[in-house]
Length: 116
Image (cartoon, rainbow, N blue to C red; front, side):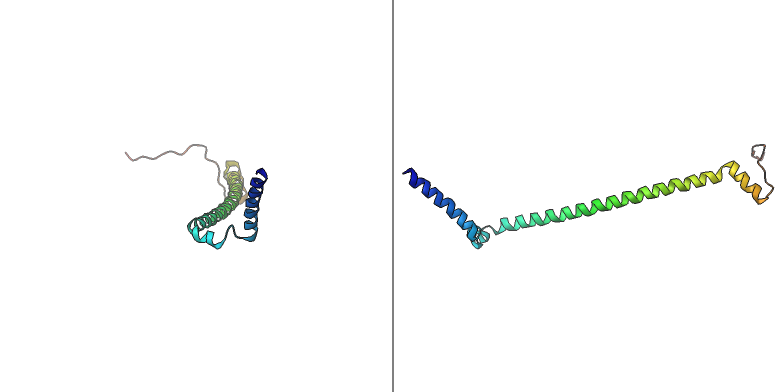
């Protein structure tokens, strides 16, 4: 009796395996009965793939923009340094002297004229 129960269970397992191999487990009848669920699963997979692609694309754009920002900040610092060196009083006086403009630094601070 135990052997018969073991054999019938083995036959059922074999039938399931045989059905899977022969394509009878997921047959066209299965898809006809569960077409809504299958369509929903396919749509979810497509949405997942689309979101993943957009995420990777945007991450690459963020990396590119961060690199560009770093380059622009470096250029800004370089330009600011050049500007600051040009507007220093001693540098300005030296440039005026080399151009022979006969300008000099004012000894007295400027004052306002007011009308009484």
